[in-house]
Image 1 (tube, rainbow, N blue to C red):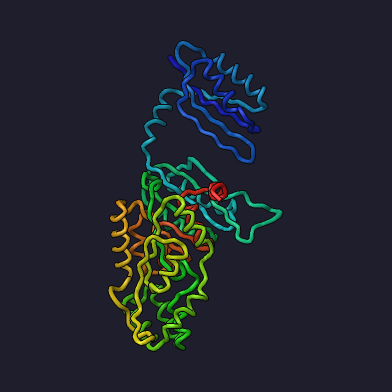
Image 2 (spheres, helix red, strand yellow):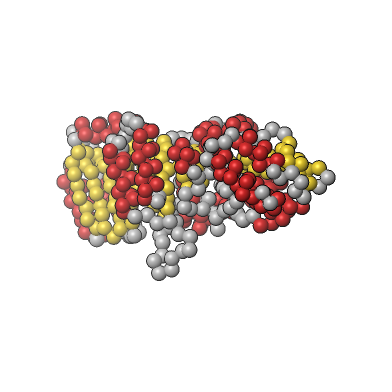
Length: 406
């Protein structure tokens, strides 16, 4: 009867190590049932679950592996495994897998420990942990540091809502963003990303900037804040705010546009997504005058926003056409996905306000960006202390891959 043995190799990594170890196995006609490897700071941990056929014996194989390990300067350990245990592992392959991403300026052991404890409490086993961000320099620290690790966990989760609530509590208490979603085929095949504009792509609410020019800044800002918290219907709040802008000269739009600043990471995330073949769009409750400029500047494929009515060189205080509110944002996302031949599971939506929730909720991945608590609670992921380029980590792109592409 064949023997099943788990082989663990640990020690200083070196070129040719895997070739040497597997070469020994090949000489004895061994079958590899499972294999995994991790290298952290030039220290390797290699595991192989092997089947030694009936016509061979384990002793010569293990002896040759120990000799090879001695030559390589690494430790080789063995553990026999029963056929019953192996078949149990095979049966567990169908368990649902989840991706948990921790994102922050830096990550502490306490943050990682807290997330791992939540996984254990919910009967999820962490199978893989991968660092997506680069190694930080302690001698020359970055002014905009980034730290990100991704965990893959398997198991039968009884209450996903409860686990999300627990992770959100850790996120709020410990200052780390945590994304939690199912690992499925769509996660690796997302092709469309849409962004809100105000306070997402740019560091301002344009209507508030226009209101300052019109001398009604405080009044409009109060209405904006209430709308962002979900306390006011967006259509009504927009009508009330735009009405206060009546009479503002058209030239003011250019003056406001000139002082708008992009959000940290906006250029990197849009250029990277375009380079990788994603379609990108703006779906905004703001104004198309400013959205069109961003579309040209950053290369967006689509842009939808509200249009201010202008007559005789001045704003009339009205909006033309169909209002882009929360439900309309979701409808536009559906239309774009259909136009691109995609399922909604293949889309990503990013926004900060309550009127973004409809599109965040239907997207395959909905990201609350520097958002109010009501939005963070309902989104599948959040970026609270990083720039928009944090999105690249949440979709699984490693920092070294960005560097290699430059």
